[in-house]
Amino acid sequence: MPGKRHIESRVKSKLAVLVSSQLYALRRRRQFTQQTLAHKVGMRQSRIAALEMPGATNPSLSTLARIAAAYGLGMRVEFLPFEKMVEWENSYSQDAFDPRTSRSMLAKLNASAFDK
Image (cartoon, rainbow, N blue to C red; front, side, top):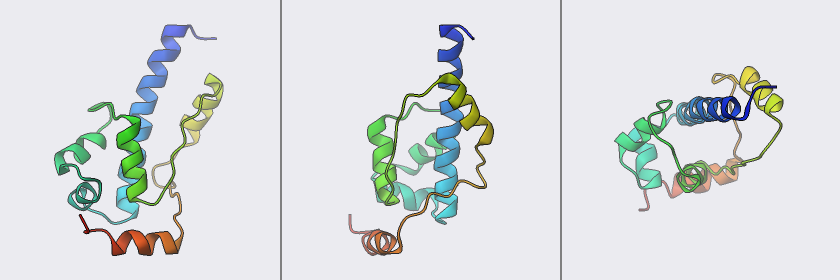
């Protein structure tokens, strides 16, 4: 079993890659530009670009929750055995990542997309 520092380093680096990859995949799947998403969540386009770049930022849970809400999605943070994280990392595919939002929620989000 790897040591504590190794695990911590690996968790941080893999989360940086996987979170930014999910953010990019979500935006592309919904056919949003960075500017459109930025407007929906009240951020600058440059912040969205940085969030999609692995390791460029360290997004807070609050920031991730704002983005999840813009897509009508929930978010889960869970602690799990290191081996399970490695399994998750190895099975993740940006192309296959597609959390679904109900059509009624999408309609509500689209109707209020530019209400700010």
